[in-house]
Picture (cartoon, rainbow over the protein chains, first blue to last red):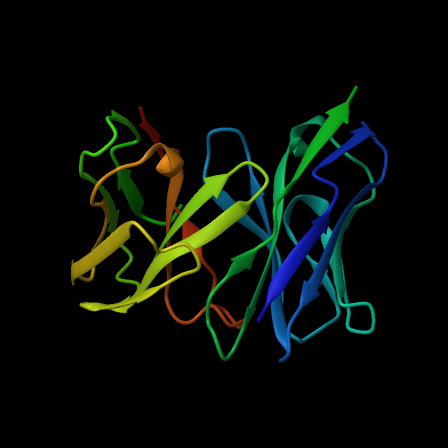
Length: 113
Length: 116
């Protein structure tokens, strides 16, 4: 069965600092991996996705994530945090044999001025 | 934004009453999903549909049923609401199976349901 674990339910960074949100997955078949962002009182918006074309994936708003098969990880990073990045972030996994998205527990990012 | 409308957006209901949430899409996407979001659990799949009258269970389907009689509408019904079903419910759609490529899930704005 597939699963996703996001390490840290809350992450706090200062404006301008590096953002690192951790995601580890479990999958018996090659996974497809996604990061979604949710702003307060809104639905989820796709940030980026890994589809095996390239291990380093660039998304919207300056975010990127690197797929590391040996570490079963897909961590999300941004070099310099902005106040507008404050939101909840979800990592998700799918595979060709299920076609369903399985989400992690979510990480709330706080950006301090 | 993808054309997804959830109704109602907020609802308060009493324990034991039936409740139906509606998801309407204008994208003609084949797949539709219902998730619930609870603190500490992320989003959990309740049911999904892969076509008209074709549905399947997700990971937390007990106490919920769904119906899809038209491509554009996916209904989630709580036959007898319980306090444990207080949650935020999200509908999502995708053109094909969510398995990479250009297929991705688009989410509605959510329905906040409170069962008292």
